[in-house]
Length: 250
Image 1 (cartoon, rainbow, N blue to C red):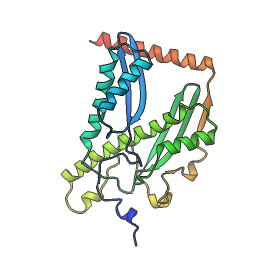
Image 2 (image 1 turned 90 degrees about the horizontal axis):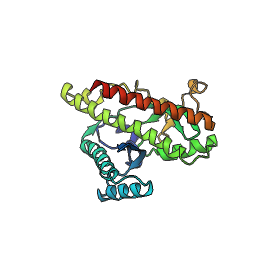
Image 3 (image 1 turned 120 degrees about the vertical axis):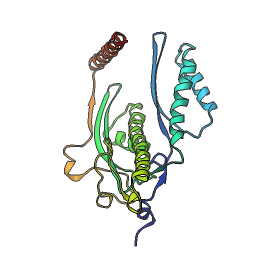
């Protein structure tokens, strides 16, 4: 006898983040009059739009940004929320599916790299809790690392959710009959589907394959001030080179 959870794996679901909280990743990369502002955070898409304006006002005030940032921040957040909402109500097919999640992050002096598998069918999964546990296990003390890990996971899950909507749409168009709902074409980012029953219990969201433990275990590096400054200088040079190339091509 199938459990209710397993019986619904192949059934179409309405678009949402495959996590307990339906929080979406927001990225800001804005430049106004030579001043730049970059940020990454999660947002509840069901919060009133007035919260966006309030957030932008607080950000401009707290960071002492020029007034020109206010409409740019509001527009960027609202545009990303509109993209998310454009998928709402559409079917997405998950199937018996897990995906690889990769972390390659530098947060201040901390560099962390990791790889693990995530169960897309577990809508009780919690990237924030996973990030909290990982930081505790690795003894990471920088409070900015935990939200950065959770954001990186959510960003990848969001991309996969959007791809699953596209797959469901293509299935409706190209397939007829019973096999249409069961067929899933793995996307470039998601990799090959694996047998969930061999890897997961119903209460689990994350797994490290035993044969890959020696290859894909968390790697943690702590950078010196000199290392951080060198990386920042390299990133700044890359940014300027990109702008010069863009201007030359115009």
